[in-house]
Length: 94
Image 1 (cartoon, rainbow, N blue to C red):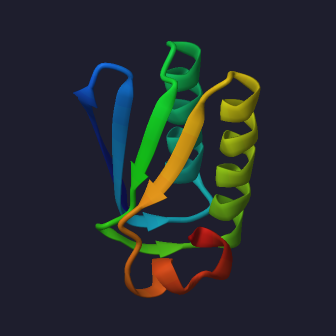
Image 2: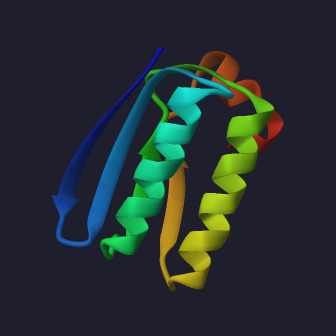
């Protein structure tokens, strides 16, 4: 199960904490939708906090690649932070 927690640390900097497992299915779709909504609402600096993420699959890596492209097109930045364990050992998750 994936959980997401959203917070703003400074004006213009949004942190989306993703915990549990991020893999193909409803949780991935919901996460992708939330990221797209943040971009559409004007988020220009988005940090995805993976410090509590246990697992990420290749479909999720693909979603992150798409989110990165969407952020670049919006003149914004997206960063990943805190990956540990299996999530950190995924070569493209860093």
